[in-house]
Length: 185
Image (cartoon, rainbow, N blue to C red; front, side):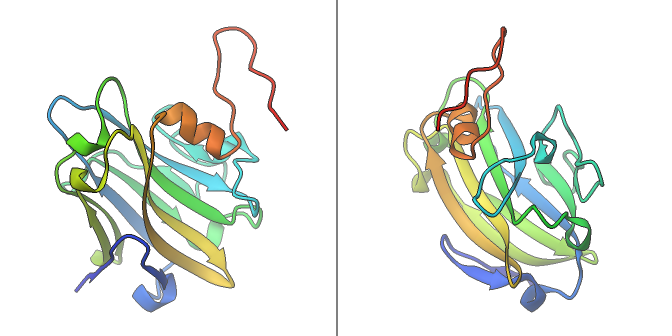
């Protein structure tokens, strides 16, 4: 039986499963809304220090394939394969996010979840709904983070500015039509 998480709850992955080859599913929907679901691989400073670890529809896997975007399946809007023992040492956190593509706010989403499946069995689920949000256009759903061992945290933190705000929060640069904007100190 899956362990149900609430916002802010944390657990060691090893307390949920002995597996390191994990499936992460996200279910999110809302009337007239389109979503981009991504995974940010962050360094010890919680920064996207290597763009190759931003996994999304245009970049569906990391170089060593430790994080792979799998697409919609098994009732999930989007899904990922995460192989914890193949993640490079410089990556200390995986942040799974959802952003609205186009108009809308996270308060409009229906009941959704992020879940972890190991060996075909769901081991963790963090359910959420639009009532937890207001004008946000992006939300950090859940994190895998390394603190001695890999752990999972149900986050549920929103950002008003959408994907651009999320990218900047993680130290990434938003691609411009011309040259990229200089990074601020």
